[in-house]
Image 1 (tube, rainbow, N blue to C red):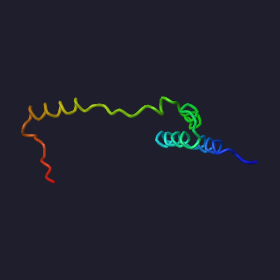
Image 2 (cartoon, one colour; image 1 turned 90 degrees about the vertical axis):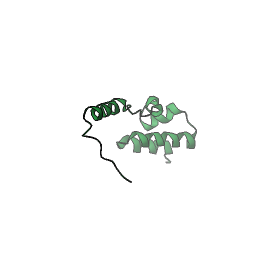
Image 3 (tube, rainbow, N blue to C red; image 1 turned 180 degrees about the vertical axis):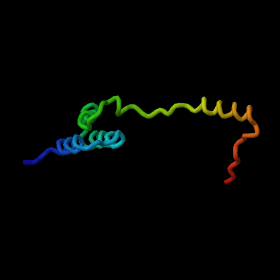
Image 4 (tube, helix red, strand yellow; image 1 turned 135 degrees about the vertical axis):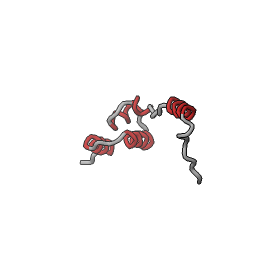
Length: 85
């Protein structure tokens, strides 16, 4: 009895604790190889469409930079070491 490749992949995904990047790669593979929808591929990969489309957005460092410059102005002798390349 021949097992469908999607079924094998689903068994592999269910057994392992896989990170989001790898699951997103699997979704792209499923979509390219089997021409399935994003929703179906995400369901087979084990996570939601929202996770597939979301990207990491780092917090801006404006507060840290402002605090740093404030400290340099208040305590000019502390300074900042010059890094020569």
